[in-house]
Structures are given as C-alpha cells and as structure tokens.
Image (cartoon, rainbow, N blue to C red):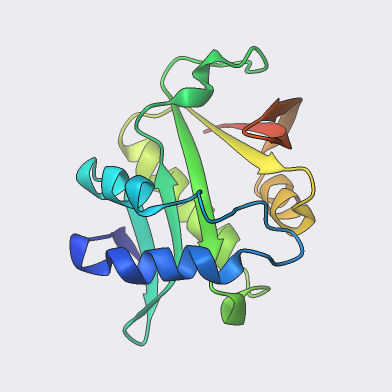
Length: 157
C-alpha cells in the first residue's frame, strides 16, 4: 500500500536511494537524491512510500516545484504533475512494484484533479523506460539536463 512518508523514515528512505547507486541502470550519485530532497518532499506532503513487513521497499515523489514545466516538449502543461525519484528496493525489483506505484500515484493524482503526468527517465535506465512505456507514458522528446540524457515522458490521465 502506498502512503505518505513521515520524518521518522528519513534515514531509511535515504538508505533506499543509496542502495541503488552504482547499479547498472542508475544515474544517481552521492549528491542526488539527498536528505535535502527527502526533507523538502516530506515537508510538502509529496513523498510516498510502499512498505512490506515493516520496512520501506519503494518510494516516489510528486515534485512540488514542477521544474520540468519549462521544457518545450510537453503537449499538455495545464493541471500537470511531475513524478520523480521512483525507487524500488533491489531485492524487490522485477516484481511489478514500480508499475503498481505508478498506477496508485496516477489514481491519487486523478482524485486531486491532475490531468497530466510528466517525468524524466534516464535513457540508460532501460527497465524504468520499459515500465513507463508499459504504463502508457509517451516519449515526448529527449533532454540533456542534470548532467544526463533523459526521455521526457508524459501521460494524459
């Protein structure tokens, strides 16, 4: 079940982020994502986690700043939300959790009146790109930002 994260889970979430760094498809590093992103997301009630047996196995954020709105690739900008920092515990990968998290987030966003979802998928992160495509996200363009190459992906809800 997907739920809002709380401040008592900050370290566990950071540990989850760090656990995937250096893996084949991950572009994250020691500087990103950091405790600063976690604190900002928790403060803005936009960091969600999925738990199993009392431990966090996945997380995702709705970016409050909507930094991607400035990109010229989107077909829709009105009532859009930006998803970021989707991570699944390495032991739980390949079981459809990322797809499930996206589905639950999309339902939550629909309930809030959101019409469109934007996200960036690192081009080298083939499993993530496949998951987003399976979830009916469209590649709207390619962007070089934050020191990496990404597919800008969009879904109309």
